[in-house]
Amino acid sequence: MSMPTTSCRRVAPRILIAVLLALAVSVCGQDNATSSMHVDEIPELGYAEELRIGSLDDPDAGFSRIRRVRVSERGEVYVLDMLMREVRVFSTEGEHIRSIGGEGEGPGEFLVPSNMGLLGDTLWVNDPRARRITWFGPDGGVLFTTPTQQVPIEAGVMGLSLSVAPAVPQPDGLIESDLNMFVGGNREIRPYRYPVVRFNRDGEVVDTARWETADESAPTYRIGGGDLYAPYLGPLRPVEAELGDGRVVLDWSVPEGAAEGTLEVVRLGPEQDTLYRREIRYEAISVPAEVLDSLVEPRLGMARSRGVSEGELERTLRSAVQLPDFRPPLRTVHAGADGSVWIQLNTVAADTASWVVIGADGRVQGTVSLPSGVQIHHSDLPAAWAVELDEYGVPWLLRLKLSEVDESG
Image (cartoon, rainbow, N blue to C red; front, top):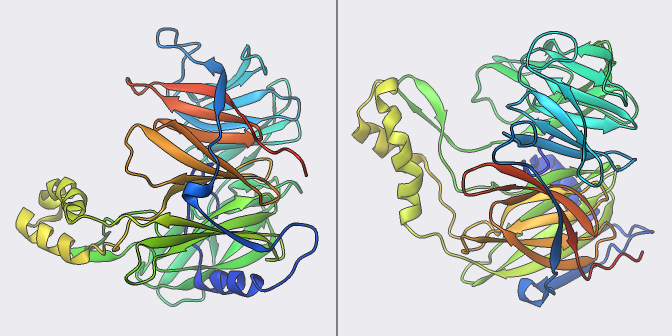
């Protein structure tokens, strides 16, 4: 359900069925016809770095761990630094305007802020450790707080207990729960249905927005009297990201015996209507056998804590890992504030990352090659705000501008 701007999640089977059914529906307004092209046929876009914010030496100007980047209607840039426990606000020219928060448990302070967003000129910050969402006015002053205590819900499955908490404020002023819910009892019970609950700003349950299904995730294995998730070569398919009042769904396949795969990109509207469908063909990359070693060996150090030998743990892990025949064609997807979709391809290059950019109307704008340490956090074509980790692991905030982007329509 919710995702960092560059995070991905799986789609339940019933949602996939709705997606496939929706593909056959003709929807007016957007170009929803299927188009197919090879990734090598997509034109290359250039880009320019217009602004760089950060510092190696000045702790007041440098960042520690950038968690979220949001841009207000006035163009001010809000940056959530998770380790510094504060939100920094910058002008469009990169000038520091104010800092909001700081470490502590007092009003307007944070323990472990994990998410933030803007509703008009109101900033909200979710701090699960402090069990509250704090709301700030345009000047950075505290307006009010919403408690985020866990609320038990009925799972309808014997042996399974669930509880949810307010997590993601919505444009209508209500707050939805997300996948960061507490799951107790028998975790092996899958699939099961769970509600997305809506809360008011006092943290009280208002209604249920919808029901979703928890599908099988990564394979699990049992060792040392407990269940653990097996390592896997991700992301798991299919992948989705929230996009406006709808979502974008990405799935891929490689026909048996073929060297070419197909990445399918489907944008769905609020009623599961198909706004567009795009197919991107790519050269499938086989998964070498040594990938299994890279997944298993780093985890052997936990054998002692599980009360087993390294040999027993290694045998169990190797039998639990389910490697695909081919690498997934993508690494992550970013849903832009303007409705654009940025897909980071899974290439063999170590120093660059190739992104396919699709505009809000479904037009494939092109591919852009960025340094591998750059991740897109906010986009409004042709501009994008990104975070780059330098060789010391220090984050920098960048404003990029793509060239040759078709802004018509």
